[in-house]
Length: 80
Image (cartoon, rainbow, N blue to C red; front, side):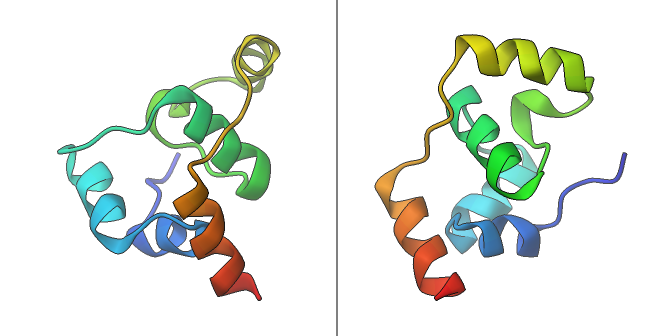
């Protein structure tokens, strides 16, 4: 599976600095945000990397996908 690019994460609503920190390993994405990104854009990042669809479905049954308001706001601004 190919790595997610910074541009993909930025387009999805993450700030530029946070996207680069995540990809460089300096910051991590929590499970609720990872599930939200997967649900919104099909991005498998952070704790979802390398997981099978059945594993993601099981996690989704336990955890509610959630993004911070700042991510939702940036996404709305970029997507119109």
